[in-house]
Structure formats: structure tokens, C-alpha cells
Image: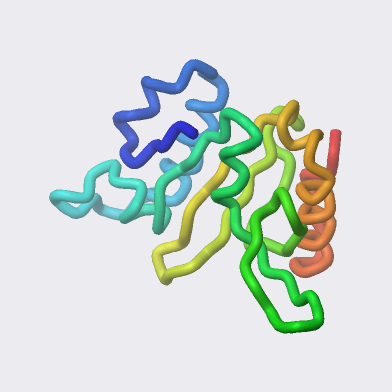
Length: 143
């Protein structure tokens, strides 16, 4: 998994369009806000966590989900169970699935899952549907 913790690290992303998408998220959040010295470009400060770029199926173990299997609630991964998230949608004309789970006032981790990996895990498509139901629809339905 590639971990992007700072705006300056976007140059390390091979997929130029993905780097541009992440850059646009940063600029959208930053907006006209004044950068605080020491936090310039820091994704923990701006997003509440780094941006994780999934490279293989094993990386999906980092995306946690909650399941209630009758004996109580427990944490699993998106490889084992679907869940609703704060953001779970197709982006970049369906090339990636963006998953965000907000865990603090600042935000939370952002996961970018390439479509060729996402399509191998039915729980990702189910999570997109659950998230749409929770938040009332989504403009980024599967292209």
C-alpha cells in the first residue's frame, strides 16, 4: 500500500490522474483557509489521516468494517463484510473507488482502490450501495 501523508509526496504516484484527483481534494478542503506553519500540506491536518493507495488484495485488510453476527458486534475487513462509510463511491470515471471513514473532527483515512481490485471484492460494491442508502444517493454510480 502506498501511503501519502503530505502534499509534496504526490509526485511519487505513478498514476498522474490519480495524483491530480488527490491534489484537487486537498485544494478543495484547503480552499481559502490560511495554512498553519508546520502543517503546510500535511494530510493528517487537512484530512484527518493519510491517503492510502491500495496496490493489492492484502491491502484491503486495512479497510475495517463492522459486523453483527448475532453474538455481538466485531470489526472485520472489507474482504469479509460490507459496511456503510462516510464516502464510498466510484471516482475518476470509475477507475477508482474512494472510501473514507471519518473518525475524528479533522476527518479520517482515505483509501483509493483501483477498479480492477475493487471488482474482485463483492463487499466493495455492497458498501457503495449501503453508503448511498445511508446518505441519500450518490452522483457517482457505477459507470
